[in-house]
Image (cartoon, one colour):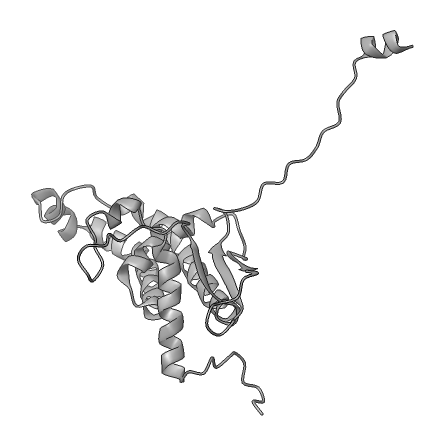
Length: 205
C-alpha cells in the first residue's frame, strides 16, 4: 500500500518520471513557436520535411500522464506570471543601444545598469526556477515572453484536459488532449429573440 504517496508512478523510476514530465511540459510550450522556425528542417532521413504542429498549445498523450502533467505546467505559468511586474519595472532602466557599443558600455558602467540589475534580479531567479523544471532555454523564453502575458487576466486554470474517444493503438490506453486555454476556447452564441416594433404591433391589432 502507498500510504501518503501522491501521484502516479507510471511504471517509471523517479528520475525517469521527472525527465518525462520535463520533456512533455517543454514540448507543450514549444508548440507555440512560429511556423517559420521549421522551414528548412528535415528528419533523420534527410528527405522528409519537419512540419509545424497543427494546433499550437496542444499535445496528445495518455489520460494518466495528462493529469500528472497539468499541475507542473500550471506551476511554470505561475512562475512566469510572477516575473512580469519585475520585467516591466526593469524596462524603465533598460537601454536600446547595441551590445558592446559605446553607448551600451557607458550604460553598463553607470547607475542605470545597477538599477536595471536590481529590478531584473527577481525575474531572472524565476526564469532559473522554470529552467530547472523544463531544462530547455527555448521553452523558458516562450513561456515568459509569449504565454505569460496572455494569462494575466486569469487567476488559475491555464490548461484543460479533453479525453479522446478513440483509445491508443497497441495497448488501448485512454488518450487525452492537454492544451492551453485561450486559444481553442469554444465561443457560445446566445440566441436573441426578434424585437417587434410598435408599428407592427399596431397593424396586427
